[in-house]
Length: 75
Image (tube, rainbow, N blue to C red):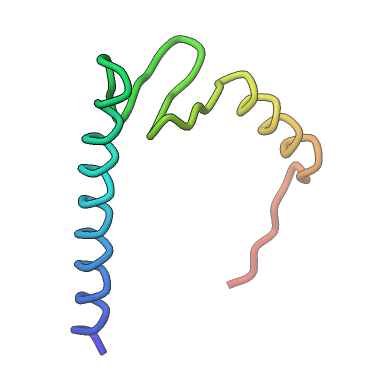
């Protein structure tokens, strides 16, 4: 069972690397300054998907309002 897990993880890693290389190569045809990860003061861009800091902060504050102050966990 352990070797099956290693094979699955290795194949997913190879698939992700292949996807990244293909995305970079085809994206560079569209415009010159193409990168996989871009970090600015307003957002982080990963594969042309933008994650805006203010939206993440707003969503995080909503979660903090709804979550209780003390979490109780049982082990």
